[in-house]
Image 1 (cartoon, rainbow, N blue to C red):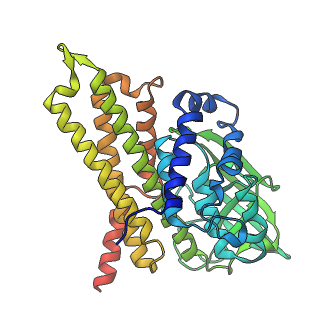
Image 2 (tube, rainbow, N blue to C red; image 1 turned 90 degrees about the vertical axis):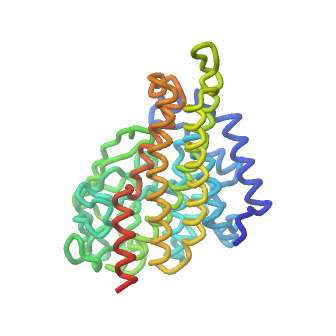
Length: 381
């Protein structure tokens, strides 16, 4: 299997890496977090107009660059290195694939807006009691004339405060936990009947609690067939988890670099601590986790187009391994830095926070190990 990148993919990585070095350093990121809304919209516009990366995963027929999951992986890895707060995952990876799966007029009308930086999407799938299970939802969608009425509560909806559209899962039939009866809706932000409570997560990304109370949407809000959306939702979550693995790999690599630089500068007993054998062993162990994370992210990404059981197995293997490695590397980095490693003034502490959040985003280690067990038992049966 060829793990080499094409010239276009390499240029994409270098272009984005240069942008982050020149215009998105740690101090700039801190200033953006302090702004109202927790971000600088000009950065997203630069992604669209200067870099052109928002179209990387869309077909040329819709104005994109004709790429796919590998291009998303390259971009997410660089976003991880910069611990960027931009909604690329929710908009281009999740929202983009949902629109392409729906195809037709909806994709033709919204994808150009995503590529231009005018459309931002958020994925409202989790609920307080769902525990990573997209079928365990209580939000209801009831037929209302020609449209639908939504009632329910969606939790920790990342990027929702910035979004122009929300992808919302809701039950049109059945009970929480049933595989049948789950539908997917595209809801414009600001629709009447929605209460939004915004807050920053530990790693700086803005999220919301969304409360739907008799929120009415039109007939075209339904994506796909009524009650049959769960396979697509599971695919979206797998693609999101694979992209999160790539982001974690980039974050881990940069945190290892920061820790290595610190070890070379920190002097104790008259010499840099990088000369101490125990620190050298720790740094090597950290590097091993980085390289394994990169390999597992590649494996998950390259299997996203396989049948659902094979895709799910590859994604869960990667997510479980990277979640464990991210925890080890983050803790090792903090131990090497000492108390300063968790302060707001030092970049390493913010990388540690991001890794802590990525461990559980789209399924923690326990969840994915349990899913792997279920998949293996089903295969053996």
